[in-house]
Image (cartoon, rainbow, N blue to C red; front, side, top):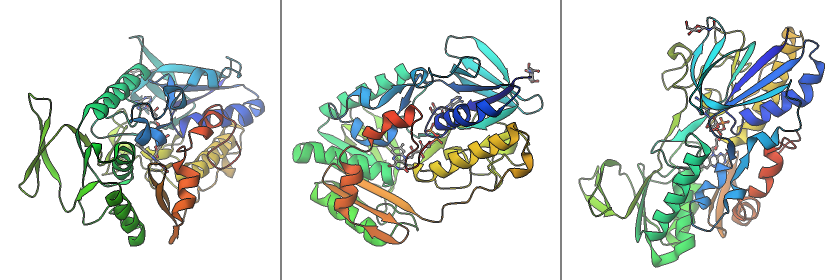
Length: 384
Ligand SMILES: Cc1cc2nc3c(=O)[nH]c(=O)nc-3n(C[C@H](O)[C@H](O)[C@H](O)COP(=O)(O)OP(=O)(O)OC[C@H]3O[C@@H](n4cnc5c(N)ncnc54)[C@H](O)[C@@H]3O)c2cc1C
Ligand SMILES: *[C@@H]1O[C@H](CO)[C@@H](O)[C@H](O)[C@H]1NC(C)=O
């Protein structure tokens, strides 16, 4: 009997996990292995560079989006199938995923092993992550580029990595030709306990040099689109502000609506055991942003991909007893870039030289490494 592994989500974790199984595990499975990759977007989105990609003309579409089918064309069709659709429902009782296929049909896929890799999106449904189909995502990105081009004032809410990087990129591109405002909920940017105060301070200084106006200890309470096309924001301070373009970039939304609620924790994360298996299940696994194990960043995904692929290899080749724990990364790592010249970062409790971060990340935001990542030649920092 063929063994079927269904992977839901072809983003930063699902896609390389499929490559790993096809390269290393498929040749060892005597009954034959079939990997079915399910994703509503036909193209992989190198969304790490979206913070610069939203600026018109900054990065061509071909350096942000890569056809998924092409990346898997070298595998025999008996081992691999790409289903262009969205998982609608997981039925644990009969090991079935119900998929709403993009062509309008529905499909029931029965699995032996399931990998949940459906990731997350930005709250305001902005194209910093895939938004349903590829066409949808690209259209939304082009529209946003046009809005950024035409806006004289842009207000960004959210001072996490995506918010500060987007503010920095726009300011670096347009200088004082546009009025850029960043609304921060806390009293500093990158307001989480594990970010060094000196790193937050450097980002604040750099944003100031770039001309970004930051407002602290403030939240956006309501946003209303006016007939002029501008957006009126009412702030928690009681003040209000009118802006040509409003970008809510705070908080992420996990793509877990298709899952039974009893496998999620209170915050909506998929509850995983230390082997990356869904708690209480025997043949369902989770990886990346949906999981409850690690920060929602690609800095921890190489190790997750390697360990999950190895555990699946054990299970699929009759070595269940060799399934092992995924070691949680103990190092904080964050690189922040604001255009090509300003950057800073942190590794563990060390602040990294700005010029080094600008060199490693700021020049291209890693778009040059995307083709080999998508085609399964390399992980982010490890060999495939
Ligand atoms: C603008 C931005 C910049 C970032 N920059 C950095 C950075 O510099 N460094 C860093 O470490 N991290 C960064 N991150 C975080 C990083 O992008 C995520 O941690 C990473 O994408 C998580 O990978 P994933 O595979 O879990 O999910 P994703 O990459 O989100 O992929 C999930 C995939 O699943 C698909 N999907 C969703 N729902 C379904 C469904 N029901 N059925 C089928 N498919 C589905 C989606 O369309 C998507 O293709 C950034 C995030 C953003 C938004
Ligand atoms: C699995 O169960 C669901 C819900 O009861 C049902 O809709 C689906 O048809 C079943 N699938 C299979 C393959 O048994």
